[in-house]
Picture 1 (cartoon, rainbow, N blue to C red):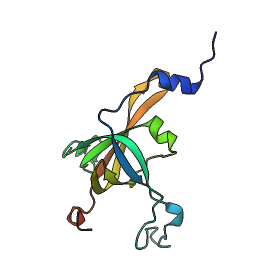
Picture 2: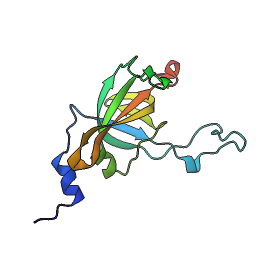
Picture 3: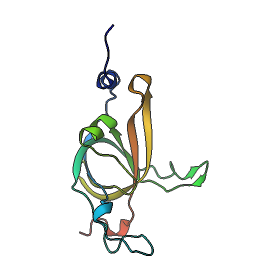
Picture 4: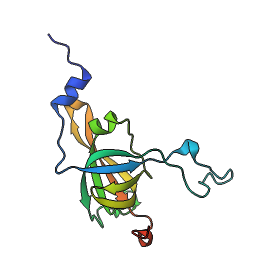
Length: 146
């Protein structure tokens, strides 16, 4: 009987992205961000790590998909990017809320992750193989004025 390693199991159920485009991700760097001692909020501008580019499947325009949940209203999203965990792990990226997408395909953006949803659960992979990163523009009036 042959011993199958964990990486071999993940290759058995590796989902594909439909029409993937390059996504430029900039993550919040909490260690280099200056915080207010009393309120624990960033002073002036939060520091970000070096940008990384990963393949992702994009869907724009969700409007009300995240409007209501069991626990009450949740933040609205302008769309989502679907990532494979294997691609994220290859570049040592762990997505978190408030991470920023600065470019989606050929479109310059300034949108932030508002919610994460693991999907694509397979027994052979031990759980989720993909994650939906819902994003929203925090300051739509400033978009394109740079």
